[in-house]
Each structure stands twice: as C-alpha cells, then as structure tokens.
Amino acid sequence: MGKFKVIDKDRGWKRIAEEFRKASQQPFVKVGFVGSSGEATHKNSTETVASIAADHEYGSDDGRIPERSFIRGTLIKESGKVQSAIDQLLKNVIFQKIDVQGALGRLGVFAVSLIKDRIVNEHIPPPLAQSTIAAKTRDGKAGDVPLVDTGQMLNSIRHEVIMDGSKE
Image 1: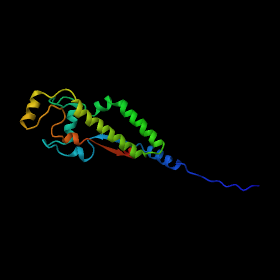
Image 2 (image 1 turned 120 degrees about the horizontal axis):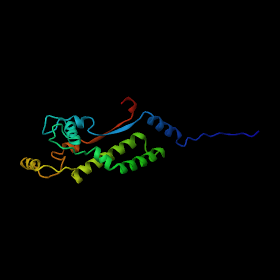
Image 3 (image 1 turned 180 degrees about the vertical axis):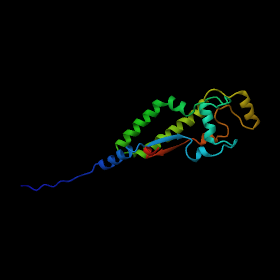
Image 4 (image 1 turned 45 degrees about the horizontal axis):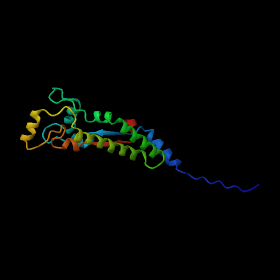
C-alpha cells in the first residue's frame, strides 16, 4: 500500500457558511429618520424631525400639509435601481467581496442618496403654495423647493443596519 496524504484547503467555505448564518438571523436596513436623527426637535417647531417628516410623507391630519411621499415614492420610483443594487451586492456577498453587514450598509447609503437627490432635484409635487413661498421670503430664505426649508429634515435622513432582525 502506498502512502496517502490528505490536505484540506478551505477556499472560503467557512466564511460563506458564516455569512449564511448571519442571513438566517434576518438582517435588514432601515432607511429614513432612524436613531437620534429623527428624535431631534425641529429648529422651527416643538415637534420632532421625524413627526414633521411623517406629516410630509403622508400628509397632515388637518390637510394643511399635502402628501409628498419622498421616502416611499422614491423607493417605488427607483425600484429597478434598488433591485439592481441588491442583486450586485448579493453577488459580492456570495463571492466574498463584502460581508452581509457591509452590503446592507452600502444599500442603505444608496437608498438615502436616492431620496435626498429626488428631494433636491425633482421638487416633489405638489408645488409649494404661494403663501408658503411668501413666508419663506419673509424669513430671509429663498427658493420654492418643497421639503427644504432649514435643511434639517434633509440632513436627518439616514440608514441603520439591523443584523438580528429576528428580534424586531
């Protein structure tokens, strides 16, 4: 009988198995007003940034603020781009170029950039009322861009990666 030697080379299987274990914990990414960014009091109000954003996203109960869906509307409008990003990130996880947490982080950054870009460049309808534009002018501001007044709400849009979604 000849002598045999068995060499076991891990070509990344342990890392792939670890990423699948992480994925089984149902990780996800939140996009919007997460953590302290939404809890801050708005500069021109006693309300939180998140509550003012909700009024704009869904319209206010009293009807004074119309619905301007900047989060849902953007993610629906750009769903093809979001799906392409997810597909590419998933390939990168499978081929060990990035881990699940890093992929979700990149997806969050991408979604936030889509939302902010749409607010600034597309002027989400309906347009501002003339009375709102006049009030902004009186306050020393200029512009007719809906959802942008002090910039606090725009700058508060963030993402957060949750690695153990099974507890959410």
